[in-house]
Length: 239
Ligand SMILES: O=C(CO)[C@H](O)[C@H](O)COP(=O)(O)O
Image (cartoon, rainbow, N blue to C red):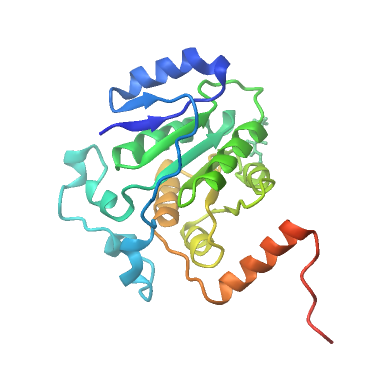
């Protein structure tokens, strides 16, 4: 399966080649953001689970392939999230976890686009990468994004500077789930220094497999969108 992997800015081209080599022929580099195309709602498969207590072991079919035989990844997970395009951005603190998710989410069948950085630089700054990830998500309807740093705070703040972006700091499974259900967040901020890899995987899995509830939550999102568009604050309730 060909997966589009977009790596960083032009100076990162050498590093891009290295990463492509490491990840193998599944991945090809592209020079620009891919054109938007119809994507399945990432929560489509989870619709029947809306009223159940959140339990990943129930949500995922686990019988297809024992994790030990699949490098620790159950391919059945991809059944719930296939065809989602996911943009990832980070800084030095999030690089290792970002690279982990580039591989893991690619292995699960997602279209993964890595906006960088491509290599470790202890002095890099998160805003360029997180703003770029958010810009691409907003421009690509139906896509999702992960912005990863030490805490995830600055990364989420940076992403939220992009008009139309809704980025949530997802610091456990519940907040990841609510970020989708109540906030229709397209981006998750994750603190690589806050979690084990396994915890981060559970958080990201929850984010990617949960669907927006709509209803009253859409009204609130519309209020924020209106403020963003017009600069007019939403009216306070009459006394
Ligand atoms: O989490 C972050 C922002 O919210 C950054 O990753 C963090 O501030 C980087 O810190 P340092 O430069 O000390 O490695």
